[in-house]
Length: 117
Image (tube, rainbow, N blue to C red; front, side, top):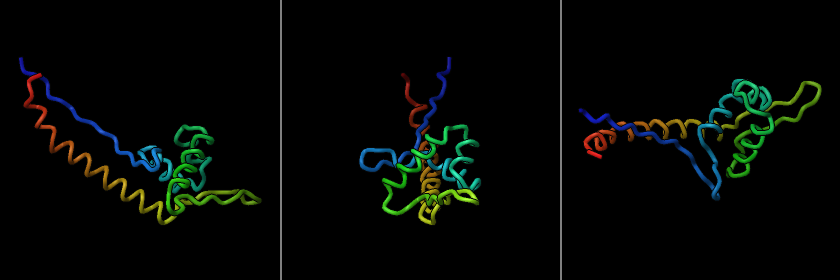
């Protein structure tokens, strides 16, 4: 009987000061903010509470050397939120590193397929 092949998986996360700075969750939220223009709408579309979304983005801003998301206070026209140019660069960098991680896993999977556990 042939042994089934192994699967490898990993998730990319960046830490700062012992806390998660960026992971797939923060990136998805930031990209949704770009589409929706507000944390409230982004949270709703991602099926998470506004409070959780706000906390995630607040932590990203707190841990970042530069603003990542810029909140605009509500008023007659309502508030909003935009992702800064630095935030856009973080998204691009994260996505590039995620591709590199997937390539690494794909290239190294064969090493485990030859093991006889």
